[in-house]
Length: 245
Image 1 (cartoon, one colour):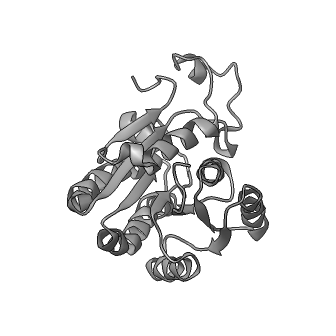
Image 2 (cartoon, one colour):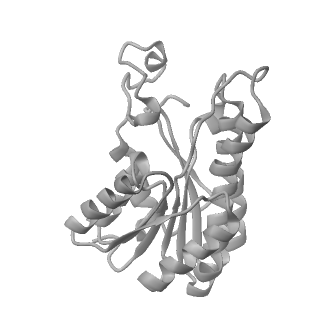
C-alpha cells in the first residue's frame, strides 16, 4: 500500500473533501488524525469508517484560527500516533458577497480559517518534517484562487494566498526532503455546492459538462502524499474538469 506506516493529519476531515481524502488514505495504509470543528458525531463516524478499513483513527477538535490550539493539537497527535508524515490543510469556509457589501467580519473569517489556519498547521508540523527529512504538505486551494470568482473576493484571496504560501514553503523546506503542493478543485459534489443543479449555466462552462466527485480530489491527494510524487513540490494540480484551462 502506498501510505503504509504513515500518519496523516487532515483538517476538516469529518465531512466532504476532507473525509474523502481520509478514507482514501486509510485504504492505502495510513492512520488518520481527524481534525474538526463543530459537532463531534460526524468526526466519530469518520473515525469508525477509517477503523473499518483496518487503520487507526482519532478525532481532535481544533479551531485552526487559534495558533496555540493548533500547537497543542499537533502535540496530542504526535503523542498518540508517534509521528506525523502527511499534513492536509482542507479546513475551509465561504462567506460570499459582492465587494460593495462585504463586511470586515466575513472577509476576516474566511482568511483566518482558509489561509491563516493552514499557516498555523504547516508551522506546527514543519520542524518535525525537517528533522525527519521527509514530509508531505497538501493544501486544498480552489480554481477561485487561480481565476477569481464574482462574489468571492475573500474566498479567492484566501485560496490564491494558499498557492503563494505553498510555493514559498516548497522553496524553504525542499532541501530537507519536504514537499508542499496544492490541489485546486473546481465544482465538486459536496455540501458547499449542493445548490448547483445539473442545468446550472455554470456547469456549461466546464469542458467535461459535469461536476467532479470527492474521490477525484482524494485521488490527486493520494498521489501527492505518496512516494510517486517525491520530486514534485510547489505545484498546483487542478481537479476541475478543464474549467480553468
